[in-house]
Length: 291
Image (cartoon, rainbow, N blue to C red; front, side, top):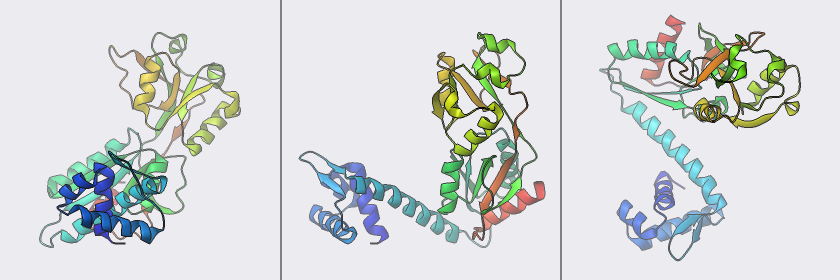
């Protein structure tokens, strides 16, 4: 298997037609068909379901598509690192981040660095801690901004000088909005929308002082925006971090902090022994100087 064959495979997965994929790749149909049949023989499994009108992926094909996309993304990232010239610092930095207001601190470092080195490009990947750490481990991200609780032992890390506060996102016209802070018993019987991350769930469960299975959890989320839409439609109350949803003015939502207070640290992490590009090395130096 080589990179070229993976590109062929992804083209057919996207086009769902040998004719369209061959035209896109500037190949003849027999050549493309032969290459992909050899790929199936190499892997020892069918990758395509060849229908009369379109070609779709088998379960193994779907798995290979995800892996092929990651491999080609890593190849692209590596090529860009080595294409950077020695005369001027440029290139790409890949940062994954969860939803946190502390990201502003990282953005300030990015801004000051790009003022001096305008050829540096930043690529932001947004996701929860599970998504971000998976991509760090695979070498697809240089850095990750993670909100505790999370396991940091296998990474190098810097703790940002700002904590996040847990609370409840709710409608302004509900009875709970009249309270300044929210206690565990206030939520025991209410429909809750909670984070799907296990470590977060464990932390919230300790705050509630009762098992999750005794709470009325009606939905989970990995990013808060869509959960906020559910709150707006009277579906439930979202447990989330502060300053992620604008609740000012005519917005129907408001945020109330938990009591006892539940604050968490935010860390920027990177893989131990990771070989950085020149741009990423410079970014790490700027981070250490600032934090």
